[in-house]
Every structure is written in structure tokens, then in C-alpha cells.
Image (cartoon, rainbow, N blue to C red; front, side, top):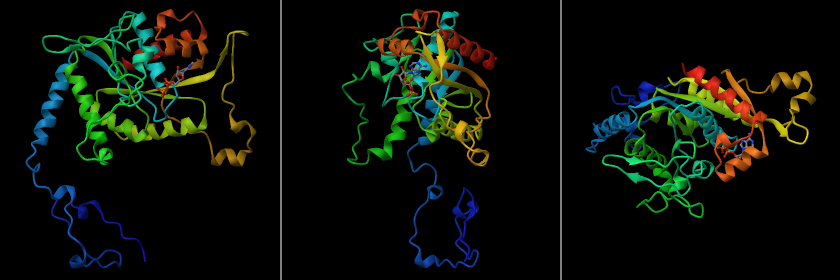
Length: 334
Ligand code: ADP
């Protein structure tokens, strides 16, 4: 017996009420099936006014971002690949060219920007309409939950439903993101960069929430595991309207200061496989432009831990690499 797949129209996708009928030899007995209300059975908004609330919030967010020329989300799908590092230091490289830049650290649960950008104790100053953001030493406006919640504490979304916090997490997270976008004074910016949390499917949720004007820059490292996850993000984002500017390969080699050379950091296991195995298990092709490669440099990690800005990096391969990627990013936005 073939498995019966209900076509969307029979699931009540906005059309007439679902009809249960005989499909591929499977007989459904309506009387035996407990009647459960589906999403599409709810008439109107159940009295919540949710559609109006969403529309109002969208218009307040659009007002708040009216002075921002470009919205760029830095994502990956994978954690620990350098999204926050590249967000901050590409912002720094662009700032050094005179551009007005803001960063919104959207990783509310694992915020890194406050420490990396040196705004851990940053003050949020209420103005007549909006709240001003703390700035880095080189003048980048930064919102990071790390400026509000100390590292010894975790962010908690209050919930009246004990043990049900998972149900509301995404809703609360995006409600908070909306509030941050509408209540802070982003002012006139050339670029607002979003440092996204990991998760390929979550990356798409951010694309949905931030809207089609937000472009995406993805970060990977030269490991097959990371490329595989980033390839999933590319596949998921490609279904939507957001522009995929390209990807950056971070930790692309290790900068050895003693020998002033870039040495391999991730050895590819492909070098040792036979051609049949290679054909079956090739590294994921990301199918978007590569905007550059950035080596691992312990000095950059030290800068991130100490909250030191891009301009204080010496004239090293990592600084030149970041500058190159920043230029490519600008060109891709035109
Ligand atoms: P993600 O945001 O993807 O989770 P992070 O940017 O927090 O990753 O990077 C993880 C760690 O790796 C941080 O401590 C950061 O300083 C370090 N790091 C990232 N990229 C580099 C690099 N190119 N050189 C040196 N350290 C790096």
C-alpha cells in the first residue's frame, strides 16, 4: 500500500474546509478522527488584532531604519566560525574608510559584540524619542545584550507558563528584536550589520523578519562540517527574496608571526581519498561568490577578547584580508 500524501488543498490551505476522502487506497473515516482545529480554521485573528499589531510594528521599524542605506546580516548556520569577529572587524574596516556603521548583535543568548567591541559597560542614553547607543572607540554604534546582561548571568525571557518557555522562545526573541529596532536611535547610517545567531533555519527566520531589503553575508571555515552547514543556509536562503552577497572563508590558514607565513590550519581529508569516494562525498559547493579569505591570527583573537578596534591592528595579513573583504562587500552592495 502506498503512503497517502495529502495535497495542501486538502489540508485546508486557505481554501474551503479540509475534505477527508479516499486517497490511494486508504480509507479515512471522518467519524473516527478526532476533530482538531487547524491554523486555517481560525476565523480572523481570534480577536487578538495581531495583523494590525504586526503592521504597526513593521511601520515603526521602517521609521526607525529610515536613515539606514544598507542592511547586511552576517550569518552562517554554524556557530564558532567567526561571525561576530568578522561583523565587528569588517565594520571597523568600513568605518576606517569613513562610513557610518551600526551593529546589532542579534545573538541575544550568546552576545559577543559587547566584549569584542569594548562596550560592555556601555550606556544607553534616553533621548526625547529614542535611546542612543554606546559607541566603539572608532565610532561604531553597537547594540549587544552583553552591555545589559553581565557575562555571569543568562538572558531569561519571562514566561508565565512554567516549563513551556520553548514554546514562546522564537516569538519573544523576534518581539525583542523588533523593539530594539524601533526604540534605539540608529540615525543616519551607511550600513547596519546584524550579527546573527547560529542555525540554518533560524537564519531564514531572520531573513523573513528583517525583510527582503536585508542582504546576507555568510561565514564559513575550511572544514567540510562547516561548509556543509553553510551550504544548507545557502539552500534555505536561496528560496527567499533576500540577496546573498557571498561568503567569507574565515580561519583560512594560520598566520605564523615567527615565520611571517600563512600555514594550513584545516587539513582537507579529501587529499587522502580515492576518486570514487570523492565523487560521492564532495565538499559542499556554496554556489555564491567568495568575497575573500581571512587567516587565523592569535593577535585578532586577543583584540576580540580585549575589545580593541580594527584600527589598532598592525599591518598584518589578517588586517589586509579584512580590508579586502570590506572592499568586496562594498562593491557587492552597489
Ligand atoms: P561566531 O560568532 O561564529 O560564534 P566568533 O566570532 O565568536 O564566532 O569566533 C569564535 C572565536 O574565534 C572568538 O574567540 C574569536 O576571537 C576567534 N576568531 C574568529 N576568527 C578568528 C581569526 N580569523 N583569527 C583569530 N581568532 C579568530
